Amino acid sequence: MGRASDVAMETLAIGMVGDGVVAGTFARRHIMLWDFARAPRWYRRLVRSTAERPWLVRAIATAQAGLGMWWVYRLTRRHA
Image (cartoon, rainbow, N blue to C red; front, side, top):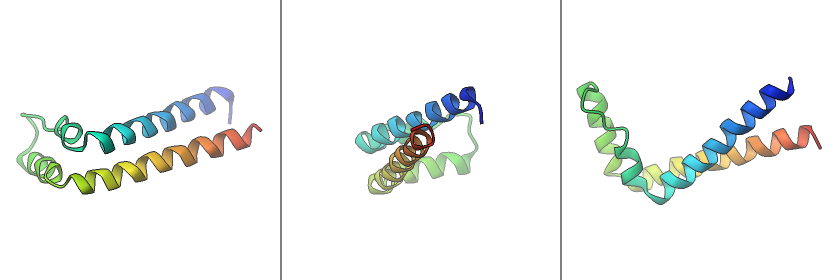
């Protein structure tokens, strides 16, 4: 892969880490950002029921941040 795609992948990975940290820290607030008034009813119910389970949001956020860190590690090892 080229340098541009490596930069793009690392940017996405760093975004995953940051989003995971924010979601883990502010679980309910972060998930409620996805509660759109014009979304289908099933989607709004899913978002609201997830917001009632902050432990679930934190578990997913931890996995997301960990995956992002692993991805950055893999990318940097390729160029070391």
